[in-house]
Amino acid sequence: MDTPELGVIGLTCNVVGVFFLANSIRFRDQRKALEDVLGVGGRSLLKVRDTALNNMQVIIGFLFLTTGFLLQVVARWDRQWTTLIFCAGIILFACAVYAIGAYSSRRAFKKLLREFFQSQPWSFTDDMELTKEIGEALGVPHGKDMTVEAYAHRVRQALGVQHQPKPGTPADRARRIALPGR
Image (cartoon, rainbow, N blue to C red; front, side):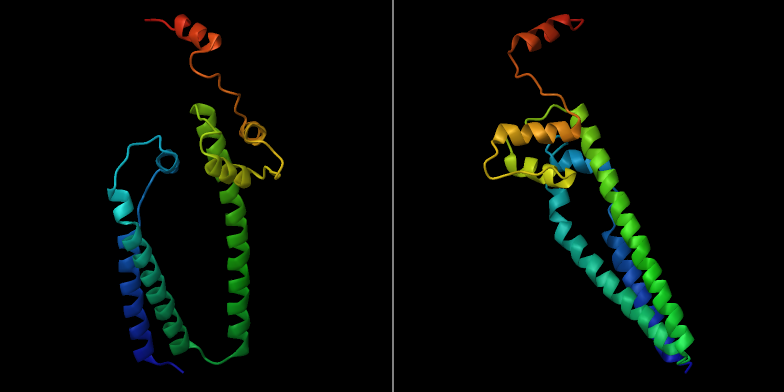
């Protein structure tokens, strides 16, 4: 069942889909993205303004690409069961690759969190919602009877962060005195 019209329509859908996806792609350094989310980086509304447009373009792009590829498959499919079995195998393989990628990205995210918080002073008790998100990402359990300080301490431990002395303490003053040029 070779239908060239469906193939051409499918390829046209692919071109439109690629255009939308290319328009939506934002290349950002992961460390910069983490700094932006946590409020350490520079602030700008330009990034926020384009978020809805980028999301819409991604959805439209994938819809056009998927439609285009499915039309090409229908145009070329010879109605053989072996072809269907091979396609199912490819889909299962893609699912396995996705699962491995999801696991790897979670590990990389945890590593980025640890690197960031080990290099930046951060008060985990000031924003408990964010601290809970960080704790959940790291698998730190929290109970209803747990204090804010206790949970923040567990999150710091999971990140490998030492407790930061508060500014103005004798340890902080001694550290400032020891710095050259002051």
